[in-house]
Amino acid sequence: MESQSSKTVLSLDSEAVFSLKDGINFKKSPDDGKCYIIYKENGELKACKNQCKHQGGLFIKDIEDLDGRTVRCTKHYWKLNVSTMQYVNPPDSFTQDELDVVMTDEGGLQLVEVIVWDPWLADPQDPQELQEGEVTVTYLTHACMELQLGGKKMIFDPWLTGPAFARGWWLLHEPPADSMERLCMADLIYISHMHSDHLSYPTLKSLSATRPDVPIYVGDTSRPEPLSKGSLMPFSCYLRQIDEHLRFMILKDEVHPELDTCIIVEYKGHMILNTVDCTRPNYGRLPHNVDLMMSDFAGGASGFPMTFSGGKYTESWKADFIKNERKKLMNYKAQLVKSLQPKIYCPFAGYFVEAHPSDRYIKETNTKNKAEELNALIKKSAPGITTWTPKPGAVLDLALALMSPSRKAITDPPSGTNIYKDSWDFDLYVDELNRAITAEIFKHKSWIQFYYIWAGFKNYNLVVRVIETDEDFIPIDNGYNYLVDFMDLSFPTQRPTREHPYEEIKNRIGVMRHVVKNGLLWDDLYIGFQNRLSREPDVYHHRFWNHFQTELPVAGPDWDLFLQQVSSYQRSAEPQGIQTESVSASTLSLKKADCTVS
Image 1 (cartoon, rainbow, N blue to C red):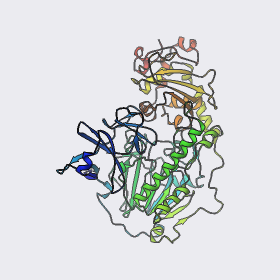
Image 2 (tube, one colour):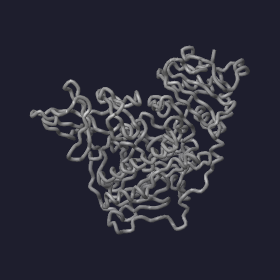
Image 3 (cartoon, rainbow, N blue to C red):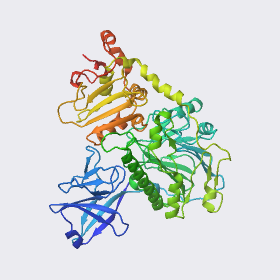
Image 4 (tube, helix red, strand yellow):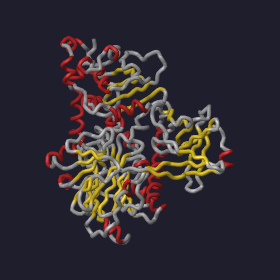
């Protein structure tokens, strides 16, 4: 279904081309003010957008660049070698998308961008008149919205109970009392990605007890979360025609195509765009003038820099960094909304809080954007756009909103409704995590080799020390404290003598053992603020973190097989904890059955 077109994003005349210096040149388009990078070497030219592929920051000259080939992102300090279009810090991460350089007969040049055709234009439908009450959108909590679309009910990202990211995130808003009832009455559910503030197992467990047959749709990413009733949808096509008037398509994120998706829902020609957590949804190609647009807004969905220590990571540095990051995000979202010109905009997917008492430091440090402030910024720059700051149970009637801005299109929850949660079931969920501490597998230190061989990450020059801690990140006397050398997947008692980068990761014991036992992604530790990190040198190792956050095997470790292979001598003789003896992966078969220490 896809086709391509192209457009010229920058034109230079012959004089401007002649003035290009060897090395890096920054050029701004007089038409839209966007900036581009042109690299010149031996008369050859390469070009790209001045936009970091990681989080969309702008590049500037790298003061540490000695050969005139690298630029540095102003957002997270990533570095791009423009001569190769490879990111060099962090290494082994992304490749920058190039623009075509086309020389004109007059000696000028044009930078040409190839554009993938907009799939929502494949079978356009003229908007039909809506009746009052025909299309309503009800905010439940965080990223969970209920859409009534004629006779069908669709729900986005239901997280209605329990924590997310192990025990790090808790709901800020109190869902309406009938939220679970509403979920059980849904005709279809869309889950944008596998992060647990969108794919909530406590919520889906409750749902399955009543409605195990409800259709759940997820995008066909490289790592779709396995759902027994889930339907994987190819990207960029109106594959799902739910009824005569309702259809939808799922689109992927350019920056995190293995993970994030967004959705366009169309009913009687009226479009609702939900970009959720996507950094650059659909390569930046999105429909304009949709009836309703929703997106995240808050920031703070990362362990960086709150969980880091050492070097530059002082409290004042963290505060300045977080303040600047939130401001950049606010401005970016406001500019995006202004450029897309939706009729109505709603910020959501950011209403979480680090509520557990042990995470008070994170709660105080990890300040977030406020939806009201973003909407005020949008109203200032684009006064024609209606903004909605949602409250749990508030309802938007799309027909009324489109008829006239003066109509009362939003019904707020009844007076006295509890908007913010004031209690959480901490013990229920924390106790469940802590039950992993006494699991049989952790009585045998060879679980370490077994686990990391299962994880499958190696041939990378990085040494990591992992330390089990208490609630306050103080190492536990009888907890495990071990080294992993990912160069050869060995487990030495001391750091190797060769030159190597080093990271120290302190993890709360209950969460770490729960993650290991169940083969979960390390997002529960990192995004959930359940660890503390330091690194020498202060370099982000993209390959390492990307593997443990997105590329672990889908099937968890076979611990039953592990226990079968633990010899009776080893069970009775080996100590529990502290450091492991040096065992190289070369002495171990990659078969799970052969992972015991010889």
